[in-house]
Image 1: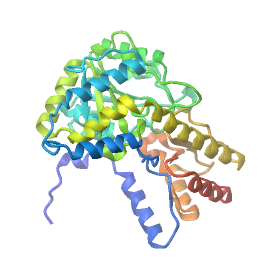
Image 2: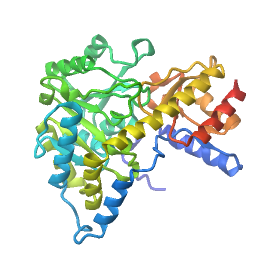
Image 3: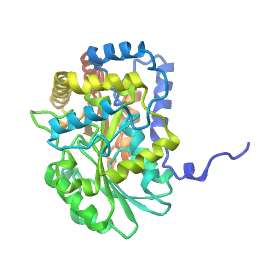
Image 4: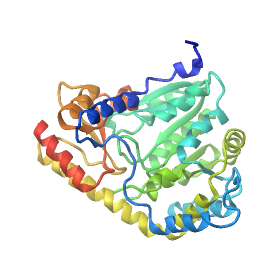
Length: 387
């Protein structure tokens, strides 16, 4: 057989999630009633106004042509308005905002826009695997900074500073965090901005879960830090905020030079968002803000129900302050992958081993609360038996 794979693909870390998918398929083939808590795919229906606008726009003349790479101006304006109202930060819709085919697309493409082979990228461990994939595929070198439970899964500024070299070109932060559920404060972002400005590199902040925050609190934007636009960009997603994961719509905001470079990559490798989806996204941002609170309340109630039941059953689980994930310690004597396997074999529950997010995720599993309450209750029943 011909060896067709590019070397850069061999440099990617093993895709652990593919192994989990195989395990799940095997269980399903045996007739197991599998409860999948492994995927962060919101199950709450997309608000009706958004769906109705999509349907209407899809019937309008001219809706099915190619759309602009930079998105319609109305959408960029809607993103800017939402950002101003939510974070009290002004954004120029013609230079500081770029619509994306989901934030994941932008997170991957920004590496091609800014990184040369051999450049170094500072990446949180545990963290979203796409930070590593994007850097590796661009020929850059990932450098990991560990996030420890005893430090609230927040970066240690002194340790982070020691990783900075003349080759450092990018730093990734992600709060609210996938997978830990931790929320950072403005003071944490200030440290990152100071470090990036001093080192002359770009700070990329993944804020996809900014609206899934509990207990009456709000997550800040890194662009609220004075001077942040000199060095930072922030990625947002409608997937979580409005339960639109399959619609593939998000945006990047911040430093206009970085936004321009990202737009240039999109022009060469990508296409614009389907026009009816853009129209529906405008409706979401301008008319469905009350739905955001309703969606958030669904996940907060599930968190309370699930974590409360687990702790009542003898597990020791911290309630995540944000996201729809539970970052749970595995029992003593287990490692993340073996416990993931045990959950599937003995309970029919799919989870994600912490090591799927980096070596420092060892000792944890991530469970997603994106299933109806009755399925989560059934998962709790099975976990009780496991104890």
